[in-house]
Image (cartoon, rainbow, N blue to C red; front, side, top):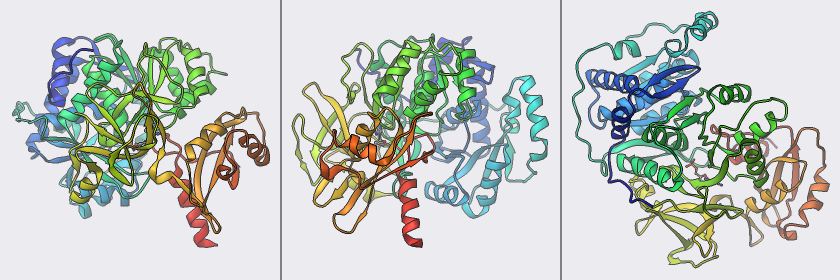
Length: 542
Ligand code: AMP
């Protein structure tokens, strides 16, 4: 494998693509396209506009946007102007926005001109201490017909003028050239990526320019078969999430690929976009691949352009991967990562041996260590389960303004992930579970993932989440929440009997509840936290 390139800045990825592929398409948004030259020019104008309104090295610029061309333009522009990008989930409620704005010290926020998002940010702006809100008109990025339709639908929702607001059009209006900013890739933070959303208090992982550029180079090196200047990447995962930020945007730009952006996940629109754009690369999460498999049963869409997919963030059920590969003829393997590692740690590339249940070997330059969670000085051997610890150029500097949490996150320079797993003799990683999700059942550790995987083997089961519930006798017991495939039926007793063939009696769930849907996080992971909160609330009310 070729050596990884030396550390560089994130904007250097774009500059290189603009120089190498100026006339090639960089972005497709609902059918409208921008070349690399056009994207580069917009980024430079936006970066100089940001400097004009006071952005200097280290200013925190928040991006609170659904996927649109603005997400890419403002990300690279803020970084070029020397700012630190703070990614926001536009679905956050006001309290969550306020907490993150204050924690990160965001002073400039970028929003779309959608009242649902701009309104929330506007209402917290004074309390949060925002100096400026940059408002991006969505219609201006749409093809003409879409734009007319958009105005007809949205005309009542126009936002009101406020001196705090600055439109994107004005931001890029000045002809003043950008003042170059010196960036030290290994020390300067590029992005604050808030994490811990599904567990505990969110903290900002400080990802440097070198972390992010190294991770995109690691992914491209491990993938080995991606063709610079000749790929089309489908971006339906939100770019404010670290997985898409790296695997869709940074890798896409580093490859000179065309990035097809979709503002949200809606299965019919996604299927039509695949038919229209014929993407070759498609990073996503298991729920999205599963939804495509189901939709393909009744929508006749040619999926065969899709060559290369990596699923991350949550366990990928084997039958979902197999069906998706049959439909597309492409390769779908599972990877593992987390916000603190920019995020990719490992995945199995096409051409390398695949091991069922494994998330693959580490990407180049990365060392995975398995350590005893209660005595991290003790390194564990092949096949032994312990805490997954990571070393590599993609590992964060630490948590923003949280020295103690940062100290706790590292052991002798290795990042403690809080995930339990083991390595086999070929250094393939197998995930067992998260430390915090382990169910402590009368002195016995029950791993929810083991139960979930067993339940996925049942032909009627579509989705499963297993969590621990209070048990007066054993401390905690497992409870499974299940949804069923369309047209199938099974009752909880039958599922319990089925499980007896897979797990020991102590691991059997105390309760199995069948539901019509299960809560998901913003990127489509099944959410244990939402179910735990629901049960806790019921407990409070009881
Ligand atoms: P986040 O930092 O919010 O992206 O979440 C990272 C966490 O997602 C990791 O610490 C793992 O617990 C989980 N995760 C990532 N990839 C996988 C995977 N392939 N299977 C199961 N869990 C995963």
